[in-house]
Amino acid sequence: QVHLQESGPRLVKPSGTLSLTCAVSSGPFSSTYWWTWVRQPPGKGLEWIGEIHHSGSTTYSPSLESRVTISLDKSKKQFSLSLSSLTVADTAVYYCARRRPVPEELDYWGQGTLVTVSS
Amino acid sequence: KFMLTQPHSVSESPGKTVTISCTGSSGSIASNYVQWYQQRPGSAPTTVIREDKHRASGVPDRFSASVDSSSNSASLTISGLQTEDEADYYCQSYDGRIVIFGGGTKLTVL
Image (spheres, rainbow over the protein chains, first blue to last red):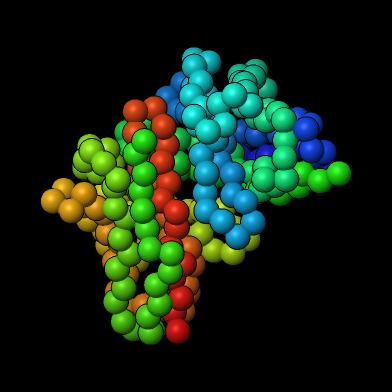
């Protein structure tokens, strides 16, 4: 059973940068998977932000690409999200998840953390 | 840009059957697998269906799903509705290197 846990500041200021980390426990940090970030604004649907492969290759949502960086620390079994130039529209629950290739299923999720953008 | 469209909400009575659709905007929805996730308030999504039609471990056989190439859509069917099925349901697929979610459907069991 794989466990993912998000951590980071819960309140960030407009124009600032959001930084979250996802710790992966219970099992090897396998080269098979993609490590993914998804967000959900209050009362709205799921939005895929981007992901990173064990190799370091990244893919980002075209709508967020200019503001997103996802990185990986294999030694600590964790990956991180950085989202810059924040506005109130970035207020959301941020989830980290594991995606397995074909069928591209997000099979394990963190519990999610609410990040509020406010002055 | 490939998109998945779901009805915003559906409702049905306990014991009845409901079907939630997920329609692809272009191309072929059958080109990549479709997953279905259930999300209850305050919780992370969990898989109910993977690889178009296969139930995740522990999901009752009241849940079934299919993909129809002719209508470029996927469907999730829940029979014998129970109050515990009330939740948001999301379809998900993949396009190139992008993960795509449908907008989600709120299922109300009246």
